[in-house]
Length: 176
Figure 1: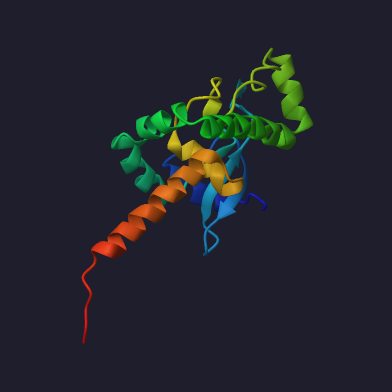
Figure 2 (figure 1 turned 60 degrees about the vertical axis):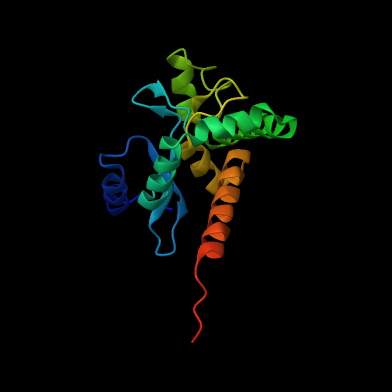
């Protein structure tokens, strides 16, 4: 998608500030509105490890509520106890690094090198995490998940499916 001034303004409204390093709209909603943006790996001459940024206000609010309720800690405990989830997390971080690298333009790569940051992003996964067994921000994980499915995003989707089923089960049956 071509980044026009109108799109920049739309993203600015969603972020509450002018976007920095905006390169693309990675995911759009049903009406074409930005849901996830793709950000450059170098922003204001500093390495920026977060490739995808969730900007959809409803999703951001929903995730804010979950984070405030301690969901990161709960998810981390699940990951810590499950070798398959640990392996999934590591694979997700590595895939994210490779994807970020595939989007990096030659001029950005050269500038990172010139600034002494050539290796800065090589070991930083989702949300800039260097420890591939950890979950930091659910927003960054879910934004990335909407582009390329990942373990934490699937955990969120599963949680929301369970919540929806629970809500439906609690609804009264109306007969006419």
